Image 1 (cartoon, rainbow, N blue to C red):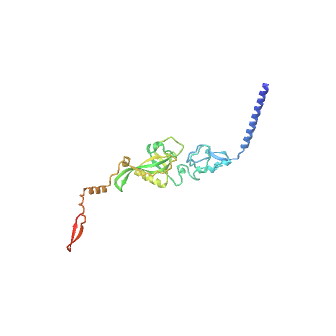
Image 2 (cartoon, one colour):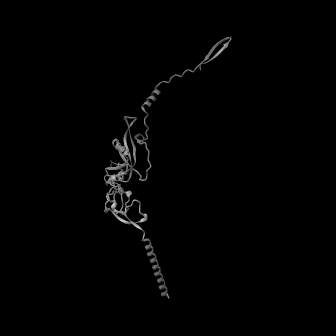
Image 3 (cartoon, rainbow, N blue to C red):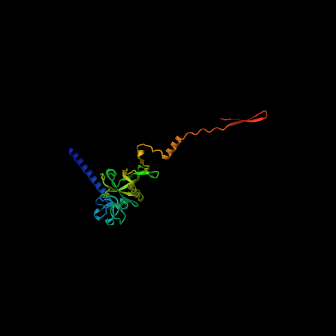
Length: 281
């Protein structure tokens, strides 16, 4: 009796397994026929500014309903194109991630339209201890001597932020943006608008520059008037010389005597005779 029950349970388990296998095979056959198209993807990691060749690319089947805009289906369409951003292995190659047709490789391919690249000399302090890496944003602070009231003989030291939200394109000769380890270099290349490039060129000739690292998502402008040495130590600017002379002159001059008050007069008529009596206040 026990053997019959065991055999029955065994047959039931076999039938349930067969039913599950048949259902799984049917599901795979129904969903395995999703229409797809060939899409070009990166076969290796591609650094920004690199000129693309066929050895860097491959094609994969991509569901037709989810092909991203700007994707390529033929590797030949990408010959001699230049990547303006870093591409990871297996990532779809999109037209928006490539420099315009005819662009040569190198750093010039990744400069935004209307911008310029300018290099400034830095050290371990100016370069934020090597943390100013490609892809980061920095502010540029100038320390210089400023003329007071238009007179070159009267100067005061001041530090002021002259440029904000400047993109670091490269450090030394490296433009890759995947690195996170700080690297102390002697030069940093910044992406600037033409007018900002002029400001930076003048700033580095009249004083010393420092880079201030920004949070990458912090784009709020900061309007500052700069800080002087006296303001740093909480001292007040001395009173201008002309004002001092006026105050001293006022203190040394003797006080003028009080002006006499006008007299009060009364006309008196007595025994037919008129007389005028005046009283001084």
